[in-house]
Image 1 (cartoon, helix red, strand yellow):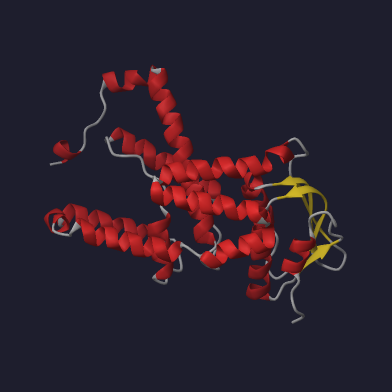
Image 2 (tube, one colour; image 1 turned 90 degrees about the vertical axis):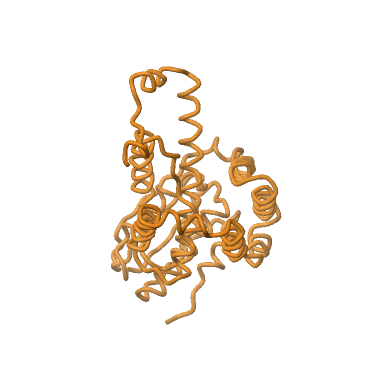
Length: 288
C-alpha cells in the first residue's frame, strides 16, 4: 500500500538539484510559502489574546515539513489563514488545535477515502467562500484609511481584489510589492534598533530608533515579548525616523494586551511630533 502512495526520489531526482531551473523553482516556492505563512501567522495573532506565535519556529517547522514532503513526492505545504481562522472561530485556545486538525485530516484520508470522495466539491467551495467572507473586515479598511491614510487602504483593497479575481499568489505578491513601494524611501535611513532597560521606578524602558517597518516586526516582537508581564513600560519613539502603519498597529495591539492581561500600562515617552501623534492617541489608556 505505502509503495503505491509514496515514491522516494532516486539518484536521477537528486541529480536535478544541480539544475539552475530546479534551484530557482525551489527558491521561489520557499519565498512565497514563507511569506504566506508569515502573513497567516500575523493575521491569526490578531484574532486572539493568547500566546504570540514564534516566527522562527514557524518557518523552521515549515522547512522540515517541506523537506519531508519532497522526499515522499507530496506537494509543498504552507500556513493557510482559512483553516487557522476556523480553529480560532471554533474556540481554540492552544496549538493543540492545529495538531488535532492535522490528525483528523490524516485519519479521514487514511480510513475513509471513499467517504471523502462523496463530499460534493460545491459544498467545500461554499464552506471556503463563507469562511473567506468572514475574514473580510470592511471596518478594518475604514480604520486603515482614517488612522493611516489612503495608501495602506489602497494596498489592502488591491490585494483583496487580486486574490479574489486572480489567485492567492498573485494577490500576495502584488500586495507585498505595493507595501514595499511605501517603505522603500525609508530603507536608506537607519535600521531599526531596540534598546530595553529597567528604570529606577521598576518599570521597563523600550527605546526605538531608526526606521520601523514590517520587515523588522519579528525583531521588535521578540524584544517586546521579553518584557516581563505585569510591568509598566515606557515606550520612547523620539529617535524613530519612520514608522509604518503595520508596526504602529502592532504596538497598539501589544499595549492593549498588556493592559487587559495584567493591568500594566504602556506610556509613550517624549513622542516625535513628526509622525507619532496617532500612536500617542492609540496608546492613550484610561486610568485603572
